[in-house]
Length: 600
Image 1 (cartoon, rainbow, N blue to C red):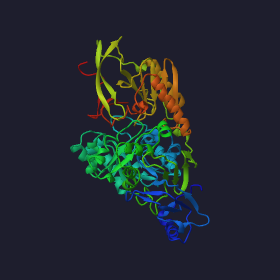
Image 2 (cartoon, one colour):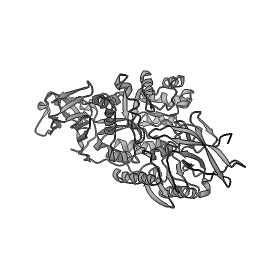
Image 3 (cartoon, rainbow, N blue to C red):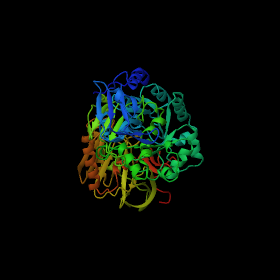
Image 4 (tube, rainbow, N blue to C red):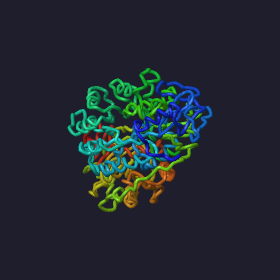
């Protein structure tokens, strides 16, 4: 069977009733298994399902009356039937793939529904880029819902983006068929302060009857947090501690626990369920950011569910957090997220609820993957030239662009340094004493240099600073046009000439990630679409990403998924210290700060 356009439940209802009643044959019957019912949180041995029009028609002890001469019968062989997995919050661009490539990578892992926020491309191409992502998402054989980005820029006044998103853009997008709500409201200081634009965007979403996504990255759970929740965000994925998860649930939010390529926030929060006994219906599993290497080699939502179970969560509860809870949150519990009549026929066959091998995947009643192999086509959008030529430099960069002059007469300085925290999105605001040679500050020891190179308008601006935690040594540089959220070019290195070479290489290829050491390029990931994504097959991109990670390790880096940490160094909405085209940003005070301390 080939995927067909999915009809609404209302359109299919007469036929679904006829199949369930035995008056018409089903397209597909799955029998001989054990059905995991996430509605009631129980396992129903021997229950069978009959599928018609891409939806479940009958779910019960015996679907024999639904079988006709042309009905396809699948024998489950004692395996479990579980609903297709849902990712409640994610960014397709973080996979370095377009929606089609991302779908092709995750379908074999059992993901059949995604709620995506394309705010990365919004920062580069504006509403036009969001529409391209939306349109390719709508073409896929699985369900990809789009959240309209809310914050481009994420922190007005602290960064400059390629395009800006406003309330008019949000109102327009709410009329598109695949828009499910508003993407994460990252400008939480704006919401707390009553910013008219932020409130208008949320109001437009609510008036459309859709969900406002949250992003409260502050550890302050006092009055500012309560003010933020009052503004309307309905969920949040930025919690890192049990108290964060509890606070969100108590305020009527859905607490989203994430496991991405570099964010390990499930274990520290799931104790709100496993130890404190909170109602798990208000908790959702998600990935947020997964790069292609993780998707191909480790998995997607199946990886998150397995991790939650390993952290002590009951397997049935973990499955609820990756299926029905997510669907309910977005108002789609009557459409997907469970194996029940009328819902989209998304189902996985697995032989073990803890190890969770994804042995067969059905989406909309069609077998889309088996044994880790994709069985269907994921159609691609025809990405135009304007989406590809997005790296604009005024001229080739030279070593002098990355020199950091010291204050007059200084022999040493006390510099503010961005401290990377392994496996977490927040950074630390550190201070190091750094030497001065010939009037220039030198990175030394565990401190490397970081630079942001403006790439949207060819202004020629380069902002320099310092970062620690990567462990790089020798003459090297890593450059990326993936730099959440403004997506200028971020260059980290120990040698100015290498930093210039890396920046120029990305301008030459139209964006991506490049690693240089001692005068030569060790690895390159080409990301020609908006400087963020590739339309090459996922395996090809994953291989390039794996070579990039190996090259970073060759340069001395031992951090887990250091590339993800690199790509977030400009994210000026997560504390404590970041870099932007405006300068070094103190994200605790939400203000640009000096690179050197006053007493330097």
